[in-house]
Length: 69
Image 1: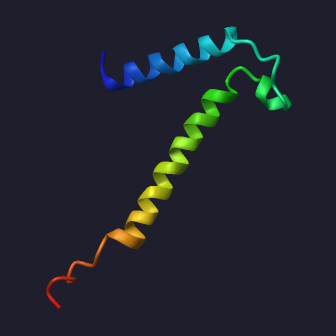
Image 2 (image 1 turned 180 degrees about the vertical axis):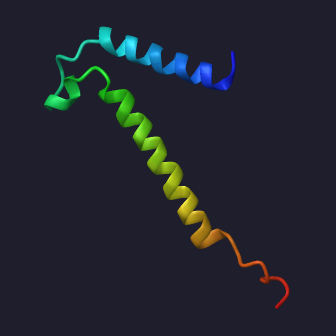
């Protein structure tokens, strides 16, 4: 099984587990959706990766001629 198959298996397993977990303590209507936690976590990871790449380019990465000056 390749990486895509493992990822797809994990997503399907997460969706199946979210269907059987209780949601009676949900404070908002969207928290009652079965896939909300999976989607929120995935989008949060994407945002964190994008933010860390942007901050790395802004503050850590130097120009190519940095040491030649």
